[in-house]
Image (cartoon, chains in turn yellow, green):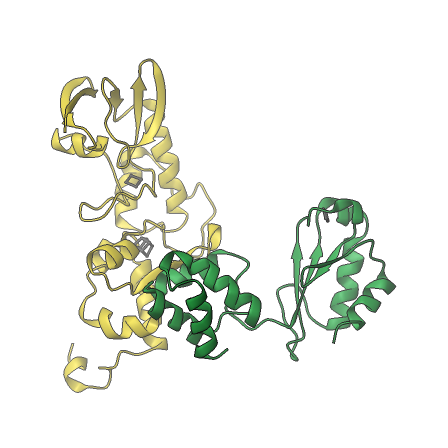
Length: 205
Length: 150
Ligand code: SF4
Ligand code: FES
Ligand code: FES
């Protein structure tokens, strides 16, 4: 594959065609904040926190860097007044779901986001999809999925599958930025206890 | 709905994963809802994870994961029907069937749903039952129409 040259934060860099802006930035040691990105998973473009400014022959646009492939001669700015403002609003919207999530608080501090700007929401899931995609793409267990849509979208375990595979896996737990996943798991387990429940060996956690 | 019938529907669509929505639609229209056993069978035969089926079945309003009545009443609450008295029609239907929008009666006879514009505003207020359009409804006609279903 051929190489393309582009500019990131004023620096001339070259990249393989097909790479995303995020990948190139990371290689160059430039940090772009992300929430739904995971190197083992397909790009998702769900949170939009990785938004950057792209100047393509005089046209400026704001794109999600984790899904945007590099292009010849574009100039990328990973921070600008508008980029910061976009990220701040995204963080504020997410804080309405998960005001105490550590990752969000760190971001809020950096971007000056107000945790009380939007009315609090009942669910702390921020729909990053990390749990769902990890279970699908890496573990191939398909124990968890999204249900419903729009403002009612939620994550949901398939209890029968969860009872068989999740107990010994739980690899998605540390991925969740908000602990909504753990809460959903506890609930699922209460409704449909794993088969090992009651077995003293398994209970000796 | 028995497994055999579910299998027939799946066979009709050659058991292809890409026909998932079509299969679900067929089960829904024949059975009025998607029972868990049927979805498990579909998952097994089409090799589509249950989580994915659940996502699709909850995403589209055409699907229901709870039992629905034999007749599905849709009452249009769109602007044109609204100004022509859709609320009165809805009230009448609620009173006669004893159910509110989103509900199904105990005999599994009627399910009630409100919609926003059925695309035939000139006929407003409109009530649709199982795809049949009843236009220019008044309260007494509404009662007559409901009685004609058993
Ligand atoms: S439960 Fe956590 S990991 Fe899963 S989608 Fe919600 S926020 Fe992301
Ligand atoms: S990290 Fe790019 S959209 Fe979430
Ligand atoms: S508003 Fe009722 S059919 Fe259009």
